[in-house]
Length: 312
Image 1 (tube, rainbow, N blue to C red):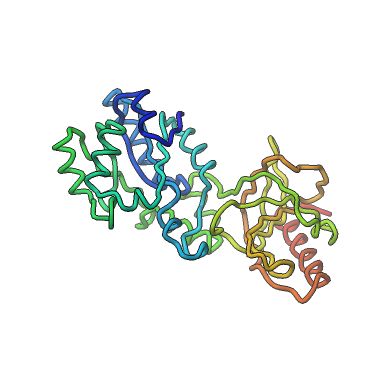
Image 2: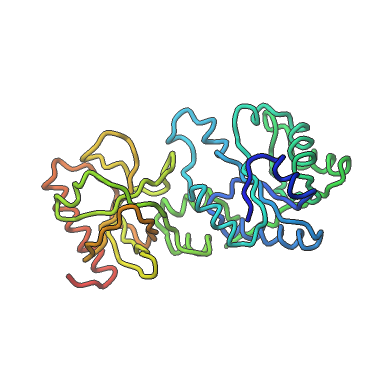
């Protein structure tokens, strides 16, 4: 899969493509259905498949406060890995900035879709809005398609029990800690990946050393303490995981994921691990002091042992 940020680069490689566009946050089953649709169309036209990924999310660009925008299910790196796994040929990272937000819908079509990418088939939802003040819509695309010679195809919708699968719906289920349902909606367990970074060593001082990960999101999709599995290359280990803002020990406001892997003392600094969420233990709390915090962590770890059936 080839990733590019300048449409001129694509025009040097290919003359045209079959494309779709979106944020693709989570790359859930709804997205996967669209990707299947894209690949089928690409085969029909004998052209490469191309996904236009909007980065950053428009809500993030316009947000006055980082925590006012929707939480990300996946960071860009995870998103690209998932797109590649579905056999996509090209990804165009379309930078959402002031210039793009002020680009007219007509110029959006002419400059990006037609001149830049040579789109022959464009797969989008009938609620897709684009261009300055979101004046572009599905009907305008259809009119432009007749003018410039590309077809506009409505995306297939994926529903489960009457609910249209969306990133918003999945965020709601994560907030409810319904990880079984989330796994069904994603087609995989929900997880957060990241490189283990140096922390303040507070966990080790309290007798519960942790692997620390920066979630790399303006807003995190989960808060609290969870029973998780940590994937270490080719095996999984149970862990008590706190994700949040650590109100007892810091006022920095920066989110952190801390994983205490049960009965494990290897050095993982600099290595990438995957934390898979299985069950919520409790909300994140602010304690009166470190003794109270240590007592609660001990209780959390015991609960995780019970969940996974791991003896001390």
